[in-house]
Image (cartoon, rainbow, N blue to C red; front, side, top):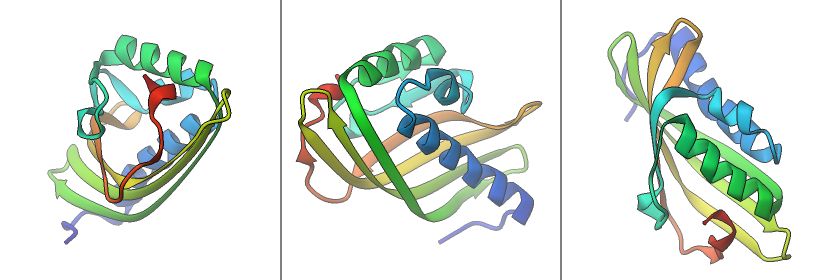
Amino acid sequence: MSVTCPVEDRLAIQDVLVAYANAVDHIGNIEGVLDVFVEDAVFDLSGIGLAPMNGHEGIRAFFTNVFANMAHHAHYLTNFAITAYAGDTASIRAYVIGMGVGKDGRGVTVNGRYYFDVVRTAGGWKAKRYTMDFLMPLSGTLENAQ
């Protein structure tokens, strides 16, 4: 169930997830990925078996490796739901289908959910915490993301 949230904020918060997926799908756009997050964000992929990262430095290191190993990404988001809203903080969940092909030719398809905790900043809404989980068994390997 969604939480009551002004439409303008709901759309701006959804745009945080859209900006993240768009940046990840443009292989090499690390600055675009970092722009989604506050400087001290927690990027926690322990829910899918990968190590959590802290801050822009940790996120940069993770995506430097991912982009070095991946040739293609495509992420599709749906079922957006605001799960908490308190004016300048909020949480949102969205379903994701993510596909990738590594430079080694191995592919992966992820069917899961994204969870973002966001804060209103002078530069708009930004993510302060990101996690995800799987809804279906993993198709392929996440080795190219490690």
